[in-house]
Structures are given as structure tokens and as C-alpha cells.
Length: 327
Image (tube, rainbow, N blue to C red):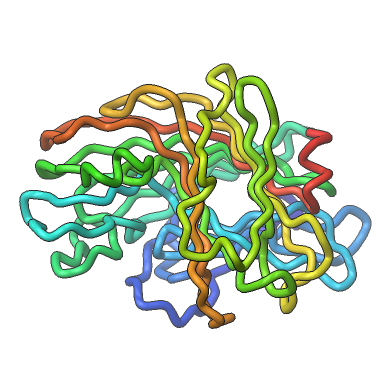
């Protein structure tokens, strides 16, 4: 427990294939885990709902600070990036270098208890030693670090600021066809479930373009299509999009949180407008996410070893789609 019993940070057991990572709190090692949870006490109660969990695969889940009855489940996941689809010096066959393998999560609680502006700092590094050369599952072509700032959760929403840095550890060639369709270089990704109109974690994508706000409602007839069919660039003044749950259906998860992502800045080999793409397959397996959502920015035909970059963005998890409009 931390901050006079307001916060609980806990290592949890998880049956996932990735290796465990080391946890440090205020400079002291707390051992290894595959799953780390952050829970905050609801004011004037003894309830500690989880607001953030971190998996060793670089998947994060965030939800608002409210503790409804029944409790609000997590739903969709943010996948720490960037990721890239293509070939590299050591992988001549095209694959998607997807999620990282975390090495260390270092937590700083010194900025908590600062009134309503307190935050928890979380520094994450990946583990190059655990790259799997025969797999496109892990991102084995970049050294990655992230600094997360988790603001004090509020009843309707929780806010997480992510500042990521990356360096290519070998020469990489993004897939040319997927670059044309805005899917080779993925600045950040969201993983979720959309099976059908009654079983889903999210059921719509909302894009904030320069002149309009467009909502794409998912439907089973859109399975196996790259969405939106006609893509549009995000508003360059404030690139922002929402992955939303608009109803109380979506069995078995009920009304899961909606996400708003604001991209604050990018540097490095990417340039130009930011596009958002989504894809889901027709799987009926409720145990696995089948919907992917990502932000894309143009990349050159080849990227040299040693190339560096940054991606800074803000993730807001609201109790519903309407709460995001109030933020």
C-alpha cells in the first residue's frame, strides 16, 4: 500500500507465454511478475477497484476510477508500440513485429498526494535479450522505453500520458503494399473484441478529422475488411480518435470502458498526416481479441539501424462513450 493506504500495487499470477519482468518501487526491487495491477481506494469506502494493469507482453488496460455495481471490467487493451510490418536484416520473410517483451517496470510514487493533480510515474523498458528470431509476435527490431504518468483517477475517467522512445537495432524495410494502405508502421495499437452485435468490448470507432467527426459502427458484415473503407487523416491540429462502447450489451463484458487517444507529438522516420485503421476477423472465440486498431504515419522504403524516434500521446479511459465528450 502507498500514499496512506490510498493505492495498492500488486503482483498477480498470469498464465501468459511471455517472460516475467522486474518490478521496482521507489528504487527498491519487488521481484518478478508477468502481471502488475494498480488499484485506488474509492473515497469514503474500503473498495479498491483496479484502474491499470500491465502485462509482460506490453499490453496495458486502463479504466475509470468509478466502482459501479457490478464492477466495470477492463475490456480493450493498449499495446505499447510502435510496431512495424515488413522485413529486417535478420528476418527476410515479412512479419509483423508486434508487441514488446517487458524487462523492467520502475514506479515512482513521490508525486502522489499532490491534491487533485497528483500522479504516479511508471518507467518501462523492453528486453532485447528475449527477442525471438523465429517469431513476429514480439518487436525484436527496436530498443524501446516508455515513461507513463498515471493521473489521479476520477469517477468518470482515468488519464494516462505515454512518452515512448525507440531505436532500430537493425536495418528494416517496411512492407511497401501495407505502407500504401496505412498499416505498415503502427505508432500505437489497441486490441479488443468484436465478435458480433451482442458480444463485444467495443462496437465503434470515432474519428476526429479536420472538418468533421465521423463514427464507424462495427458490424459482422465488415469482418476481414481494412477499415474505414475510405480512410481520412486526423485533424493535424489535434490528432485524436475514440475506440468506444456505445451500449450496455457486449456479453460477457457488459459496458466496458471507452478509450480516447490524443497524439501529442511524433519524431523520427515517420512524417505526414496520421491515419487510423481497424481490422477484425470473424472468429467466434471469446477468449481472444479479434479486433485491432492502430495509428499510422508515413515511413520511408527503408530504415537504417540506429534510427531513433519518439511518440507521445494521452490515453483517456471513460465509463462510456458520452463521458469522453465531456473531457
